[in-house]
Length: 206
Image 1 (cartoon, one colour):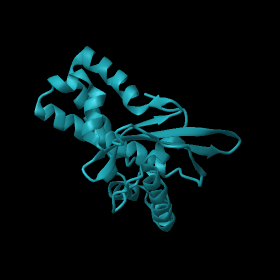
Image 2 (cartoon, one colour; image 1 turned 135 degrees about the vertical axis):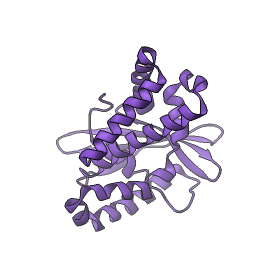
Image 3 (cartoon, helix red, strand yellow; image 1 turned 60 degrees about the vertical axis):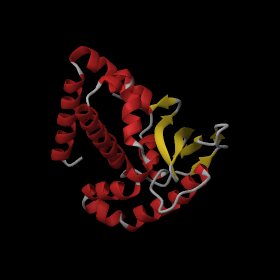
Image 4 (cartoon, helix red, strand yellow; image 1 turned 45 degrees about the horizontal axis):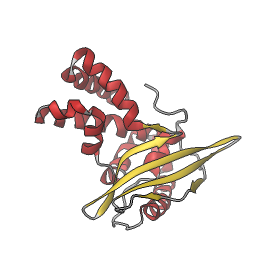
């Protein structure tokens, strides 16, 4: 399934949402601060990553995962099927969906080549509990790519629950695709397909 038109959206999705060691009241400020942190880490480890691209995965584990709510994303992606899923099915699906996203983003991150990031005014909800951080990614000889992050305040930190690239929502795309598979062969079959897909990528080293 093709989620976005530009792979830039994939790697910038994790680039701009790398984990910070502290919570920020302003979600856009969080994005700006951790961008510099992540770029520095990529630059420092560029030689090691070129020699062994698999080292990108520990980097993703360190920088990205703390700021994604995979449980909420999984619930939204499955929709009504989440409500009828057993606890075991929810756990298995979340694990496989998380692996799918992390490996997709990790591979795309390796393609980062210094594109400039612009920031549009952030859209905050009236309650201040949810936010849409809007950015643009410069592309040589092409219009910039729009990349938006939906976050919500949970405990003492902002967590991402959806990413939209060029108006295309990650959650909506996967939801449509997965719903068709579940309707055709059931949730267990979908989980099995994701597990095989992830295992194949891991075996291939990508």
